[in-house]
Image (spheres, rainbow, N blue to C red):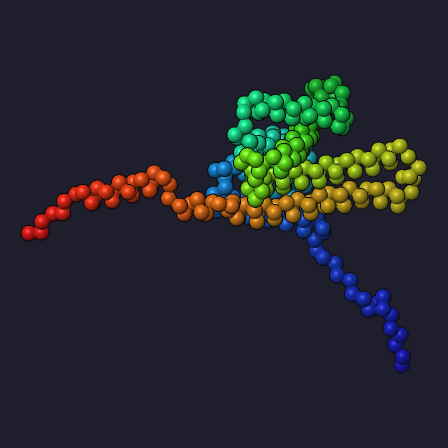
Length: 296
């Protein structure tokens, strides 16, 4: 009896019990935990308290979404998530100030004021022309949905300003940091590079998705078939997964860089300070001039 060999039938298909999103979420949360361990274990929290706070808030936010989705009423969960997003947006702005102070602490007050004003103008221009602004009446109406829309608007605009300011400050640190206190391989510049990369990736993904939606709305004929609608909708998770992959790489970058000491740190720690050397010399001189006691 001859048995016909069918390659398609013989091929085995493995169905994993978790999706790509589950894998990326697990890697992201694990990266947050490892990074926090490095920040605590290597005593980096004292130098970068706001950066540490932002990592804690982001870890709590994704954990909250993971644990409470489908377990709380939708409005309650949305309120919690939006409030955390609002807090995170303002904390990231404080991270930008923290990095700027670390990098350019030696510049004059006039340069600080000029730089701050320039960044504020840049943020205002981006807020004006990036993304739509809802009607004020929809935000001030006395209803729960209006409150949620206001919280969402604050989160979106605060995050947008934080991304723009992060990119601008990160560019300045990379360009001018070596002249001040944030040269290459310094923790300040390494954190700034990671934050700037994350902001650029997030803005690119958001811009691509907005263009896709505008194109689909301008050409309704494209979405007439169910297959085209499915293809457009499937692009959103793919873009989100791409952004998550980039962010995981950034977390690994931070873990490796913050685990290592900055150049010259070990040597400076091993060499005694001038005051300590002077104290040792004075103590030796005192022993030399003090007469020895007679032994009875």
